[in-house]
Amino acid sequence: MGAEDRQRIDRWLWHARLVRTRGAAAALADAGYVRVNGARIAAPSRQVRTGDVVTVALDRTVRVLKVTGFVERRGPAGTAKALYEDLNANPGGQQ
Image 1 (tube, rainbow, N blue to C red):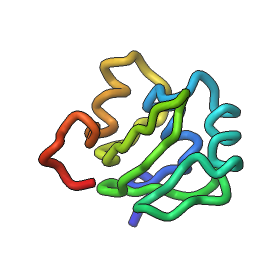
Image 2: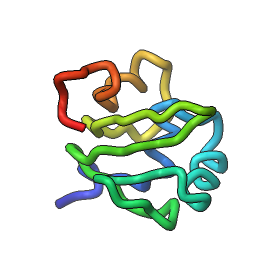
Image 3: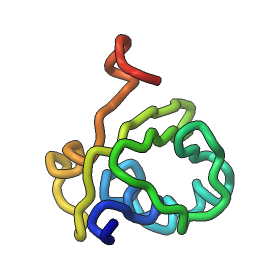
Image 4: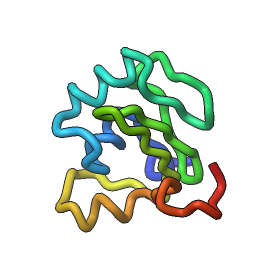
């Protein structure tokens, strides 16, 4: 497995535009507001891979997202949406 098929959760959350800064992503992970495949993570350095399901508690809402890709740099919103499948929007989907 190469580095292109996994990424730190703080970078991925930032690239996916779920948070405004990478520091905010790290703070969410440190505070226990992020789960990967149902397990609460303790560190922003936790690696995520394609197919992982990330659950994030944000501003009184919970987002359930399936990781579908990675990028090296943070891009526009359209690019960010290509990094995940929103399982909240798909009631018939796996959660």
